[in-house]
Length: 73
Image (cartoon, rainbow, N blue to C red):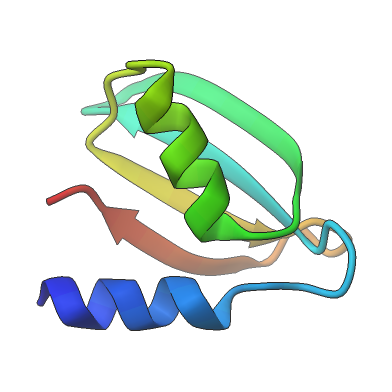
């Protein structure tokens, strides 16, 4: 299951800030980032800041369409 999440993260690199991400700790919203180019780097940055999160939602920044849900392992 971890490999599947990793592969989906590698695919989600846009041309220029194509994504928005919202990080949650359970049901509580912890962080919203409107301009995300690389989801893997964003997750690394959030972890480096020691922000607690259980899952993140990835959206198309322009249309707000939900793309993926990433669960922290």
